[in-house]
Length: 384
Ligand code: COA
Image 1 (tube, helix red, strand yellow):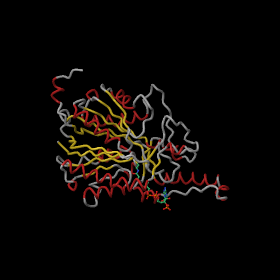
Image 2: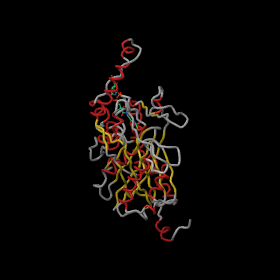
Image 3: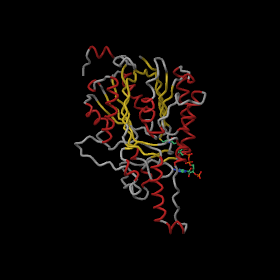
Image 4: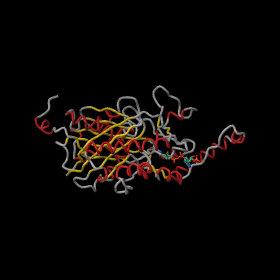
């Protein structure tokens, strides 16, 4: 396709973030509600297996507690797409009715809602967007790509593709979008992260049942030549992956066991939380410091860190290593308390909700990390 004179003139090859968007499900589960449901399930399980437990042939399920969850993770509540079935001790997973092929799928629907907000905030007409990346830790089907359905629903020409780098999907998406712009292959790219993590969470697992929540975010990455006056310069992006089995989900098209069958638990999210904590904190802190040095940025002068939202303790430690002091809520805002871990969307929610007060010249960092292991940094500076 031939470019027009004006669109050629607008191309500078410098990527910026023009705007972000957020979709938050209406329903939310408090820790008290979650623990009541889990403990009812554990009680029923233990009663049903009382003889085997008494004979030492089976282990009783231990109860969960609100105090533990809040102390270990910082999570107080999480939004979900399907609350009642998750809390029903006989179900304990979301029940999202299957939709016909002629209806918009639920992942696309919430992705579109977040994308529309980002477009509106940027004053961008969807027809002027060149590409859609659906970057998330789970796709609800193999194909066609979720991104292409989102593209269609928004009326975008060009192309779309899905990418999955677990909790780091959004930052990997931002770098990919930025690279399209640097290379001149696109001027406006939507990175959409619909995360229905309630579907991969094992709500019957005491160690992890409190972790995740549902949400969708969108980031509009554009060439500065067409971006609105108020935007965020992307100063540099860096990605890293190191293979680890400590966060894993074996669900896939080669294993189709029903979730209720024995042995199906590993087809959901599983983790060695302690190891993740110990291994990921130093890896990410060092990566941030190395990248800041490469970009000539003094990490101690970063105005704000929008970190991945998995665990309040992890973020406290990472922020301390980067800033050189205990971070205030203003320097490293938390959304984990009300959203839980929303996988790749977490750092984007933090950025979306806690960036309007920054002023021109302020420099900050969007950073995500998670399964893979994977980690991504996006250093940004406010303009306009
Ligand atoms: N309620 C009450 N007690 C619980 C519990 C629950 N829901 N879950 C676990 N416990 C108990 C354990 O049985 C253990 O008891 P013990 O000491 O008697 O053996 C104790 O609490 C500590 O458990 P542990 O799993 O070691 O807790 P933790 O302090 O490591 O916290 C995580 C668990 C998952 C919150 C934490 O390790 C973490 O956030 N890790 C990083 C996770 C992460 O970033 N993952 C990436 C996902 S994208």
